[in-house]
Length: 65
Image (cartoon, rainbow, N blue to C red; front, side):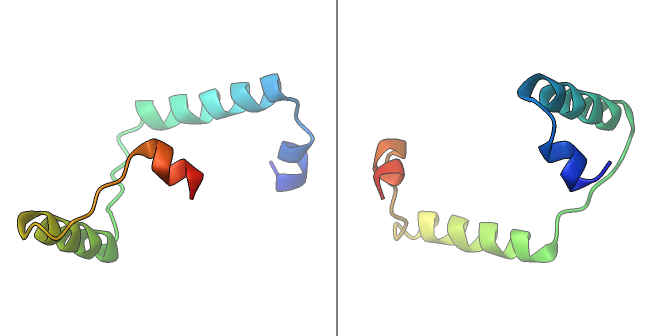
């Protein structure tokens, strides 16, 4: 299936396709390894939280930015 074919789908067809893809992944025992850079980012964020240097905002504030 190509991007062009996907963009021509209506909402119902697109959702059915996504559900079929998700279903196929959930039944297979596929192991996807997270990239190393993601681990580094999460470690940095945890470090900031532990040091009290992290800043948190509400979802509403995030949406308004």
